[in-house]
Image 1: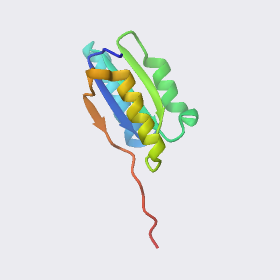
Image 2: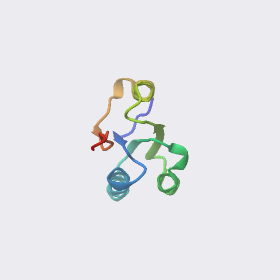
Image 3: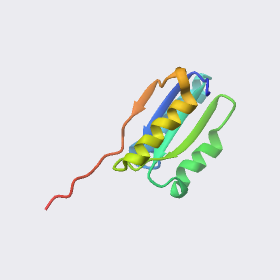
Image 4: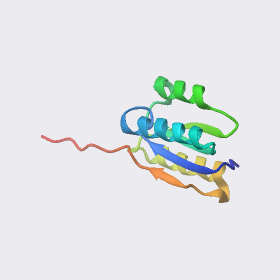
Length: 108
């Protein structure tokens, strides 16, 4: 079980607003001296090089990260994220969910 100050799950965490949200939260966590656990969800974790660099530069004993595959249109991926959170967080729960990933319908 992860037991840090607060837990944040962000979808679409590898770029754009999701990435920037994590980047700003990590900076604020460093500045405050607090602790946090970030669950970074993205479609292609292996291709999330910018996110992995942020993680490498900012992982400490007080700031931890996990990167989890999540294609929001995949029921299997969604179920895997739920199971991952249940296993990692147990009764500790989650402090914040930033549901940044979207499903874009095709328009004619």
